[in-house]
Length: 197
Image 1 (cartoon, rainbow, N blue to C red):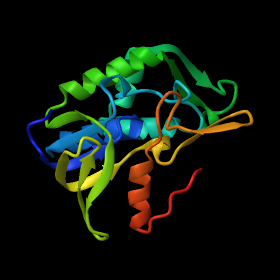
Image 2: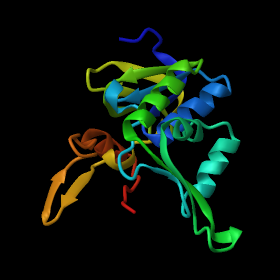
Image 3: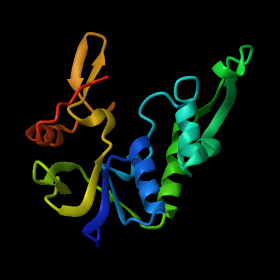
Image 4: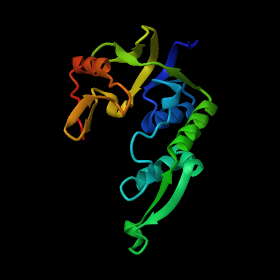
């Protein structure tokens, strides 16, 4: 269990976006709660273990320029570094690192645990505390409540997630994990539409 129950910012979700958001806010001096399901899930790469590349390489460099942790973790976990489109001009080239998933997760966990002002809380956020105009906390599955000035949702594929394998579809946030249905239902009550890319 955790001691502090009020924070400046609560970040729900411990994937790429959640870890970056929590670390960035903590670097600015805010008191942060990063909520993720389990210790083993913090920093998990859910899909492609590549960092950078043609489509998202510019984003990785922008995050790195703002002192983000993704590039540092990728450097520690990289197993192949390559410049894509090397034979073409610089405008269409893109550096990409293929990373070891376990090493990347471990690197992110070390960076997060070393970050001052950041407390990781393990549990499932199932409800938002507040009104339709202001959210000021979350309720976890164990009914504990955590309050904050701001709440950032970075749940990725977990909100009412569905996994499709061939002709078979089943609820899931990632292989082996349940989707976040209760939190999605609460967001519906705010009149916010959930959609898939």
